[in-house]
Length: 262
Length: 172
Image (cartoon, rainbow over all chains, first blue to last red; front, side):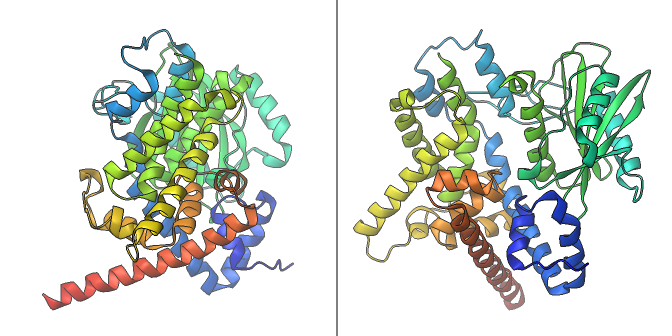
């Protein structure tokens, strides 16, 4: 079976607009058309360059003038639960951690704390093992998504969902159940059109710590992770940091209990 | 403070980033954000809290940007927007101060503004074609073709830039 694609599809694939079920055929078409493959790689590289150049702007301290325009002067910032949540989702607030930065909304340094946690380490280890699999990358495939999500939710003990990461260019491959210390963890594996994989790892944690977004890096792999309500969540992979971060933020937004309601 | 103001506040980092992609100079970009949130605050009644605040704010910002371009065109004769707002001032925030980042941002300024905005909304801000279409007020198919042309232009600009860099190195 030879599926036909055009240059147009390179853009669609890159932008997550190509239907997930066509990605395999598209990959095969690229392999068969070296010119197109080079073009796709070039556009991908340019996009990553753009993301790398512009990404940091979102972590600059926001000028006080802008926040004042919105809040007026002397507004009561505390006790605004929904605002707080929204700000976390937008990556404005970052937990203070060893080697990280203090949080800053109206000013001061803002950034993503770099810290280690068993959840992040396990997520990266599990990612390394299973993302390298060719045949058995997942236990249950995306074609049985409802069953997969239901099963893992029951075993992990929280209502999970497999986030939609298509806008970030990743589609669900499937998932599996894993041991995590004395407990269990769920792993959802995603893949982009060129075969790069990232995984979402969710497990119960010992404490009920809450953190903002944190970054854990080990060798060439990294994980963005956060702890919330007795559970730890991590997005692990070896793709560029900007891509990982976009994916992690999208997953974070979709997995927030608040977001799950509406 | 209500939820809507909170939502606008939460979008500030992204609004600033989108603005910086549209106009390169930091202060000019923040002025655009300022105008955008001022306008947003006067229109909050028209915004349903269920609506996506990002799309709503990006739409306002885009319209302001288009107005600004139009004013520029009327005023100046042959001054390009890039010359007026971007490389002429050359204020580089320290994080962006490396060759690769500078080159790609310069290249971005060199491509047509309508392609630039479509490309950035999708490739950097992660909007879907449908969302970008709403923000830009054009059909999704047009978003797609602007992105395709934008990527070609960007590639060409970057190739020129790396060629210029090579020549400079050789001349030394």
